[in-house]
Image (cartoon, rainbow, N blue to C red; front, top):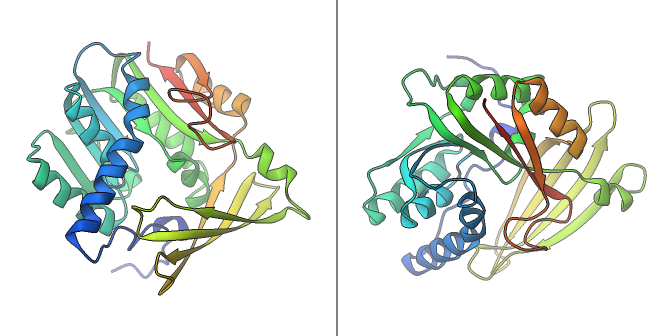
Length: 269
């Protein structure tokens, strides 16, 4: 057995979706499906038929379940590293009685796609793509190369990423602290981000403190994200053979993304 220490990005979301009651679970599920409706609305602009979808960093698989509820999912494959999030996704899937979504508890880079069908859409949201390069240098490009080979001609890749230029403006000596408050359905009420920009790598190190809704618990973790300007992301996709690269500033209407967030889409010829 390997004694290799896991990277902070690999454990950042362990233990997140654990609830005390069935009522809390149902409220949370409902809110997550509502949250992702804008994403599904966006995807419908590009696809008329049912899709085979790979989601990298699928979390609780809300996006795949929402696609199925809209009748536009053929097969969905979600790859997620966090055990607790996959457990949550599997229980939800069982209750939804869905049999066309496969949840895979794995690091994407340890998961062979050889036996998967070719994909119509490769989807990576919530800035999950930005975890890859800090975890191991070059993993962002490796991801693009890997999925390209399993995409159909005309298939699309969608990345939701962040250019933290507005965050940088708030920093002093490349550091800043930011508070976030969650919706009432979330088991956590507050999140404190302590952010430090590592200029040599274009990485941002976030130390996170989640605070329970009843203030009874604080959960600490860290993540490191690589920052991508819009031009850097566009160039990266083009250098990895994607064409018709487009950038969008919101899912459905202005203001429905984080201030520095954007969507980038590329296509396989």
